[in-house]
Image (cartoon, rainbow, N blue to C red):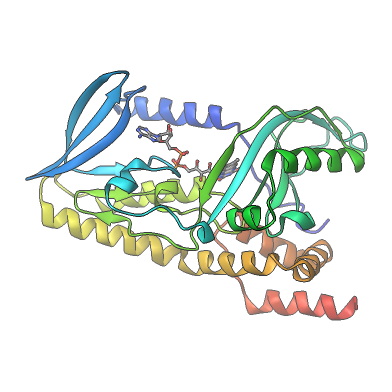
Length: 317
Ligand SMILES: Cc1cc2nc3c(=O)[nH]c(=O)nc-3n(C[C@H](O)[C@H](O)[C@H](O)COP(=O)(O)OP(=O)(O)OC[C@H]3O[C@@H](n4cnc5c(N)ncnc54)[C@H](O)[C@@H]3O)c2cc1C
């Protein structure tokens, strides 16, 4: 199939997160596990942050608070940024299971698979190989579609599993996953705040089309560190300018990509259009790689791709 040569890497989250923590420790970061951020208040030259560990509450003085605490961010709430509107939020459930495709030889690498089933549009079911035997599989869709159609993620995951079996894949029952929100970049809230900044899911920087968010969070962290590289840790005005510069750079880098993915996500909500795109991607290498790079990279939508999709649609009428 077209686009086969686009390679990606899949790693269970537990392993990825453990590696990141190890790397941070190696760099001399003081890692404090088991404590949960409660609130913070501005002081003259920074913020006092309050943490809870069991029943013990402790405080930490910091010159800058980076809220990278995920989709249900307390830091975000604390900074007065409201919950992400359901229109800009998806919901997903992931599981791991043993999987095999009897049509493949043991040496063949399982491809990454996305299934845009009619009921879930513009959401999809996915199978990402973790090894040649174990896959990460799941389902995700916009919160609004889940509500409108009164769908249930557990039921969707079960029927996706049944559908894969009906297509000839051998798949053990996936373990019970839990549902998580994916606040997406259809609307990114203010990221920079007095002596604080939001990044990752806390800043709703998930790709609206794919639901991927790890790379954007990492880019934000790198860009933030790079922008504040010369900051002396004290000067308030320099910090404010630095945070604003970071936010501007981040938005500029991803503006067209996120806008394209938001539009594409809206279009994929229409069954006919979704069918047209999927058919065009299966037949046309250009459409497949453009779509894949929007889903998993920083690509924007180009008129030329749209025209190729329409040309395919006209030819197959
Ligand atoms: C089912 C599912 C599948 C997904 N699959 C993919 C995928 O394949 N690829 C991809 O790129 N993205 C995927 N995503 C999205 C991805 O998980 C997120 O975009 C990414 O994890 C965001 O990273 P983050 O660091 O901002 O937040 P998180 O990864 O959520 O990390 C937040 C951290 O903050 C901690 N925390 C939260 N509250 C507090 C508190 N009060 N005090 C102290 N610590 C706190 C949490 O324990 C956690 O360690 C998926 C999401 C879901 C729900």
